[in-house]
Length: 94
Figure 1 (cartoon, rainbow, N blue to C red):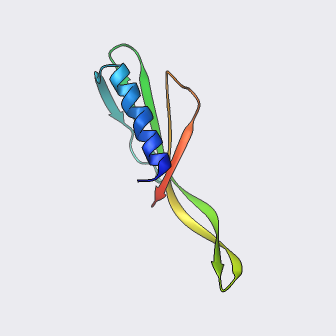
Figure 2 (cartoon, rainbow, N blue to C red):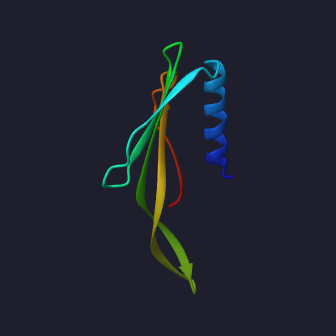
């Protein structure tokens, strides 16, 4: 588990505990681009939202002392909540 994954889990766990784990989940259908979402609506009116979608990220690989740009397909998860409306992102191999 990466540091970003740990941070995501910590923030999500704290938010869910604060709102007493009393929620209903809505999952949107996957569209033709491979995007979908999940909403957690809590009894006290709070909301946790996650968007999932594939993306291509460019990194640098060193091959025989030569830097080569490499495109990697990743699953990007964007999440935010009513407590913190700033979008945050985590990436994992797709």
